[in-house]
Length: 564
Ligand code: ATP
Ligand code: MG
Image (cartoon, rainbow, N blue to C red; front, top):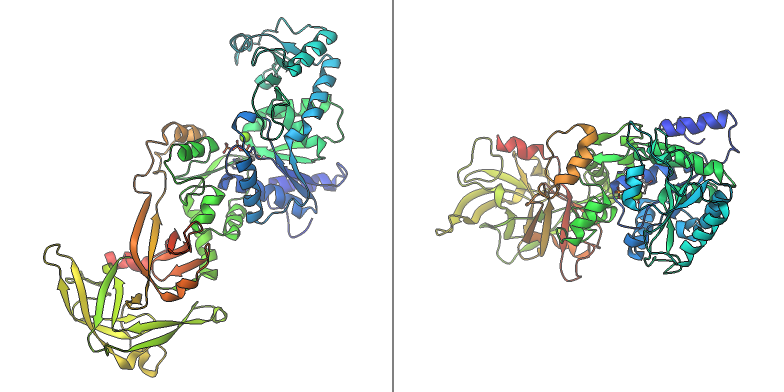
């Protein structure tokens, strides 16, 4: 094992197994997404766990598409999933697999079970199957087809495969125990008839294996040693083990369950995410409000922050709800380190410096990061007319308003101290239209007198040099839920998520102004706009328009203090 001690209970189990000499010392995991949607932050937890365990024990991790359900799967998803796993920073090298690659071998495994009298073709209708299944307190009833001979079963199964029977008219079932306390062992279905176009095998098959059959087999075919899955599969583990025990296989993987990630204000299930996309309630899978990895990326999240988040939430055996603020904390910390500081005015208010010569401009040096001089400096143009944030001026300021107000002084970041001498108002709207100030030429930042203290420092842009930009501010897509018992949270969220859609989850600010250095910004690059938060240049933006997505706000204690 590399690094320090085990990071979670799964690593403890594995390290104990290794100490006890169980298995052959090899560690091999897999991440098995179904290509029926884009990956979300919950998947990131599973990816970090599976690839992380492999890394820690010098093992390897496969990427396997669990594509046994043709009706919802699509190559668009196959591609996006690979992109997202790579982006998160993990590498499956040459080990990219598809459960559909094993359809022949899975079929062979079914034949093997039939020959051992451990599987049979069943003609019960879906309705009858439900009736025969029994209840929590009552054993189920055996299917009348259960005692079919091997020859008869082989014949019928071959004909199922050959397309002789209608969809849903017959299934192949395991012969286990209709009286088992575990429903999953009451002769579960292994194969069904389904005429659907598969994204890889086309119409070659009209029978498809069920997840509970295909998954353990795929694991074993790939030599997986530890099959890590979420808690809802705990009750399926006896069936997983039954399949492994009853089919001749090269390896006996062990299933271990862990708690899925639930986040406040977040719908995680792909089913609902797909609904949001299909009903046009969001702007695609990569809408910056989506909890998908592509949405978070477009929003400006870094893979490092997401991996850090997955580290911090840990891996446990019981479900819990993680506060979204924890994810925001991780991205803030990361961006605080790496994002260059720049200035952008989101709600511009024109400000004229009356004593600054009309034709003059000067270029001031500004540091890109207050703590990391190695991030360099840039040149900021300054001139007689600038824009400041509308909320940074008050004609009639409340107490402790340390921004600009008649007679008050502030420092313009990286520039001079100015004092407000006048303002004009648009009489019809009552809005302030222009502020007039005088600057003190002796107070240029970095000069000898620059140390003079004023209480407020404002960001600004030079009117003649600023670039127009659109800025998009985001709030939670889903409003906070009423407190619900943990077990019900997912159901509850699912039931009423549309009624909890936040009508104000995005705000488009179309007349923002940003400093000219941002002309060189590359799509996807991230900045701190001083006092406004962390922003990312939209990746989908046309090259002639600057569109910045706010990744996360700053923890603006200053704004809070000013409000009181
Ligand atoms: P969803 O319910 O969102 O559709 P899923 O489990 O059906 O998710 P899969 O594509 O089957 O989606 O998931 C691939 C892997 O990711 C599985 O091993 C699954 O257990 C894991 N996974 C999915 N959601 C989460 C989550 N919220 N937290 C942790 N792991 C998850
Ligand atoms: Mg699934």
